[in-house]
Amino acid sequence: MEIEKISKIGGISVPTFKITPAEYNGIVLNIHGYGGNKEEMLGLSQHISEYGFLTYTIDMPGHGENEKLFDENTLDEIKQIADLIKENGKKLVVIGHSLGGRYALLCDCDYAIGLSPALNKEFSKQTQDIITNLRSYRVNEKYAGINFDILRNIPACISKAENTKILIGSRDVPEIIQVCEEYKAYGYDVVKMENVLHSDIFNSNKTFKIITDTIQKWFNKN
Image (cartoon, rainbow, N blue to C red; front, side, top):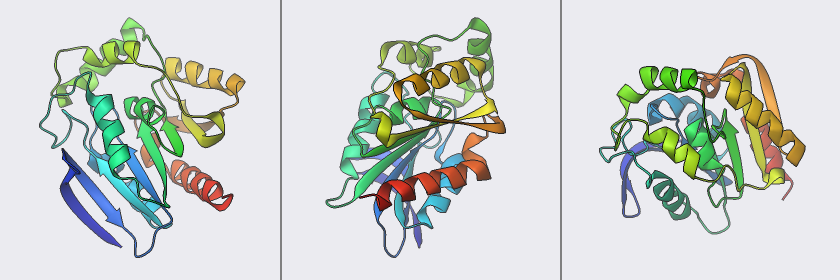
């Protein structure tokens, strides 16, 4: 297995960890949440790679080592990256946490997994204040509060129910739990994990197992 740090995907400047197994069955794009970075998702990526998947773990604009501004164009850039890493004969899985989970469910991919995906259009003032105080200082953004405007103005999900998995924690953001559980009525597979927080769901061993089991099931049925 080779782990390398690259600065571009196609013509897009994007700090990325690329993990290449000796042989791989498919490709995974891993996206952190608002105020996060690629390093915090690297453990999940390495775990997935061990099961025979080429993984890309990126810094979104305005996050980590990505010097571009976080703005309303971020979703389009992520969609472009997803298209660029596709390979003939290899299926693509896009995984994202929180805001990244919302983006994952909007990509043109074969399968998508949302980890506590922020599917809400609106958040309470209390939740907004918590996110602003604890996360926004880590983001180089176009203006304060743009993350809430983005969530308000983009679609919630285009990924097909049969090709999607949604994971939430029992100690997750209440508004996210509520909206994600509503997706069960539309046929989506929504799993709530006990004693898991919004902020650590991507590092939970429970998450690692569910994701690898799910991906293997998807790929084995084809």
